[in-house]
Image 1 (cartoon, rainbow, N blue to C red):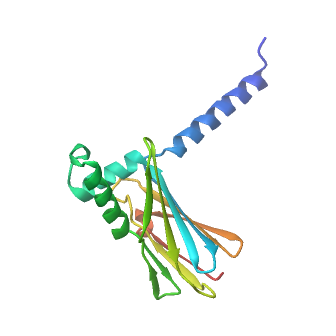
Image 2: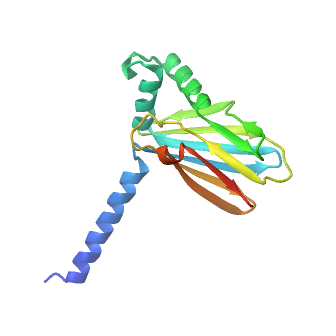
Length: 168
């Protein structure tokens, strides 16, 4: 005889695994992680699904995915990422993406960039990242690691894909 508690427990575990796998490759989600590696050197890591990226690039480049060869794809991808990314520190210093390391996977895209920026203190930091906003329902999760704390926000169409952290 099957115990009802065991059945409910198994169902909850199945739901948890399903939700985990769905969110790990969600086509409408991108994550951004900004971490200070050492004084004057920061790293930004961007992760999203291949389908999220490809849908946005189709709109941005006005070309079919099949028409983009590898050289054009990387060039258009780099232009796209740089054109839709801005961090503003302390109200005046603007940080843009420069050198990118891009890892294209079959299901997920990972992008890293090093940012040289020296400051003694950050009083406010504004993220403006409308990347992948061409996708209906897109959400970009930003995680900013600063002074042993993690600051998080969700950028979406509702907030114009921008958010400002302050009062550290």
